Length: 254
Image 1 (cartoon, helix red, strand yellow):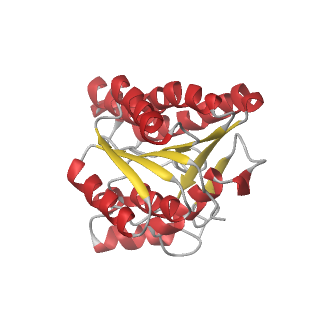
Image 2: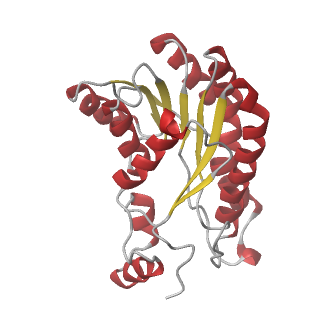
């Protein structure tokens, strides 16, 4: 039996990068998916690819910052597939970077709302649906930045992603007796469009690779395998974890 047979999963940020790779892997492992992002055309291509590989997925385009969208995703999962077992709240942005003295309140709030408040909104509706199914796995994509490593001029990103770890730990304690596991996935440098925009010169890309003990960055498919671990029963006694999948960037000093 596949690792996610008979499971229903919501994945946000599914149009590219880690979310897209995770959607394809989860589908191959038997999950029925509701995939979400802002770009409908990319989601439609993903759904078509999953169908061609024998999987089932439905696309729902919208803004994760909107509470109504969080509610719509859960309602769609219920209507199409009967409920929610797994929610991978993966969507996020780097947001505005630069000196804190030059950052506007609007820029700060946009990053916090996209990365942290959206996770609260997702969980608000995902948790009751999981309780209906007597348990589930709730996953948030955080990062090593602001947790094990401080990087300059990334204050809003660091604060929002570190906040996800606090949210994870609190919800893990709150929901454990309901059979819901809650974990944060902390990738290192990964070959995604967001990372490419950040490391946008050969020199910067080489520097980023060198920060890691493995002297390379991950493929999205590598990170998706760790998301699958947290989603599946392979991690049945894992909750409240901040799981570093960072190629050793947190411990590298060379």
